[in-house]
Length: 439
Image 1 (cartoon, helix red, strand yellow):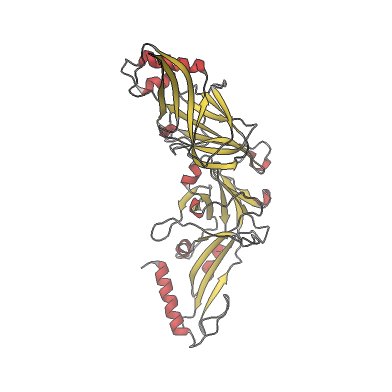
Image 2: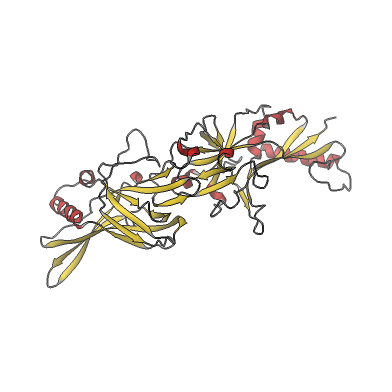
């Protein structure tokens, strides 16, 4: 039997033993179980709200390429670049009379986008000058970068249609294409390895034009969706066209570099994970941003006073947080969020789970009329019951609201949360206690 089941059984027993035959309904905070038991709602505990920026977020091996630029009015310019390798074509024989025509990079919409997709996009393709290698770590992160040539291999300006599954062809430099074609032609009879090909052709990076566009778009990372295509022809009785496919390889090495130009943001410019930034320094707003690794940290200075409650049982604990008024484009789905125990060095130590092991996710209430009662809420009852079980709560402990690790790794989604200076958007912890008399 779980802790909560025991509590509910106790509550049912006390109600059956203590209630009148026809009790008058009374609101929370007043006696509803006379004469010796009562339910009390506590919602006046103080909260401190701040923003933490993680040192890094893993972005490799997600099968999603992110590229684009988004101008955030509060944070700065957010830029996403995608790095990847392509492999040697499988089972392809180049005829003696086959001639190179052109070369393109093919990318395919994934369905993901963030920002204003009605503005024109401009992507350039650069050739890596160093191989993608994982050295002292198992992954690549949003802060990882590799050297690439400054001369563009190709570029394309277009209006994105991310809700489709269309493929986009970015024409690449013909001199480069001829070089790759000749290399393949000379190597086709050898016992060839991708590693040797990647010494010659180390990979590509999608780089957005930071002066144009205002959205970040997702593209599929699969061998049929992200590839280099070489177009050739042979002359027989008539001209016949051919294609040589160089598919994306080692998808675990594909990663997205996601950065923000903090130069015009004094508060975040010299951020460190160890030092959270109070909402009072960011216009009474805290940030939850996936790709940049930002999360909202909540501390409860007066929570340790709960251990002084005698003859009481915690029935329910709900943590409410509200989107900042007028600061969000969209409200993310509840399944995108997780809540974590947070250490003194602002590490996300453990995700809160229910007794059955499933992750604690919030509920979302939307006030379509006035937006004043739009909020997310986490049920943290099991967590607080466990914290109270030894009659001690460390005042340094905190809870943090973040995007789940999967969402953080493959998006730049964001939610701006209200701080404590505005009563309409301040977060709140509501605790429902049953007080009883043992005599």
